[in-house]
Image (cartoon, rainbow, N blue to C red; front, side, top):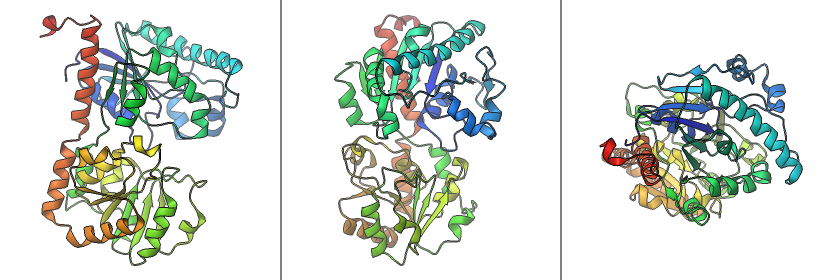
Length: 410
């Protein structure tokens, strides 16, 4: 990692204590190995406060959430601290336009007032500011004067809640940032049109964590162990991206198999048929720490994302988590760029018949040699490798801007 000894403020979209491990927070933790990192939590709005004021999430934050409170939350990474922003006004219901932008300016001023107080108290100087896909607040950097502004673009915008104002806001972020880093080639091709200093650095996996599934002593999580074998599994959010029509055909064609979906359910997208099928199970959310115990119980792991203009820019974390656990992976061919990174060890399918055939082939042919080869593919796609590349891209941008003199560093 070239980037060492810097102070970095990362404004992330996921909350730091989210049950699902995120690219945003992983990036913060790994950059903190060689730098002092401050992760700005995604702010609570007034609506969030009334919904969550009795929750454990709010209890963790309540002593730090005041606009004038400059205390930080410690983490298990010595150089990583959490900043809790103040409660903001709920404004997403407003139509895009002048009134919304004025309200957003007020919310951003609340965030930056607190950030400025923290920057002053902890003597944070010459810092790098990374907006880690929190496109809801595009103008924070301009108000706190970082030495370098980075936008980390991680996904296409799909949900109407995000698109309502996010399309305009992200466009501002891309154009105003010194550097844009994208997690897929499709996003890279879109953003480089507006900012020539745009780079592609793919998502990866926490191999150290997912490979725990290979430990013969690790028990399979009971909710998976109790299912009839073979178990065909998916670990992640069960939401819009999944191709339910495609899967329905596959599930009906394979009544001898248990299909299990492990993760939070967005029921507005899940057809009723899935809840009524005899060979389909939903477990609800499972903490990320239990992921190896879940995936160990899968005989085949799935990535059943829709093939459309949105999914072709998705680079899912679970792909390499599955491989890092040694599991055979069957996926819909939603993103052709993934072939390059999986080296033929993932079957990408164009039809339900192909998908069923791939599952049955994986069940018949899985062996120790193939498991070792899948882990080797995952080892080429670890977060260590990706964060080193992100670090190098940021470092090189600092050099080009004259903020680092390379000879002095070396």
